[in-house]
Length: 268
Image 1 (cartoon, helix red, strand yellow):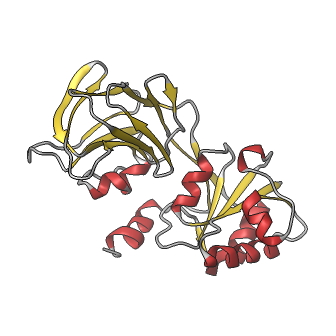
Image 2 (cartoon, rainbow, N blue to C red):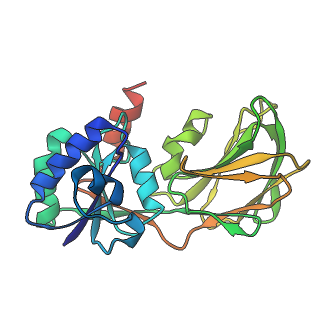
């Protein structure tokens, strides 16, 4: 098994835990991401150039989302951040988790991804969501959202979030969207701060083709998983549909609802 390792180099805890990961994987075929390798004085390479079987990410959900935009390898997330909803183990579980990984005592969980196109440009696929929102603070926009060519939402709002079931526990949840079990292949369309109180989020099949227009073109910003940003003039069409590939996670057990209670319900 060839194992890649990446970490959020801006989090001191992530660097410290990364050293522990390296110690636990001593003797294995290891590839370090360039930034992390530089800190350790070792050779490395960008994630997108790695030929690996598994990518170990050390940090929080942002580290995982950034990595998933650059690799098709399954992700084994080690939490060294604040919430780490997508991560699999904590520092306390590191020794046991690495042993299970090396022994093959795990399964791979597939999650649907969202393909986004703005005008003629294809952006990174999203594991969580694509958000189109005003480029200026406190400036409302008039959005029209179509699902399979039918007008589904005509709303003035700060923005529109199109999320996967995985992303339903992230940005979309914070604007009032429902939590969707990740086993459900669906997209969630949620307006951000809509002007009309009666405007509610929509859940549509993941096979749907969703596109978004601005009734009056004005500058906006399209953000993919909080990682990639694309400025918009406002006259482009935004298209969202099921991506060809999925996000893949190394899991030791099926634990969505215990994780939900621990990370979100009890933490609130």
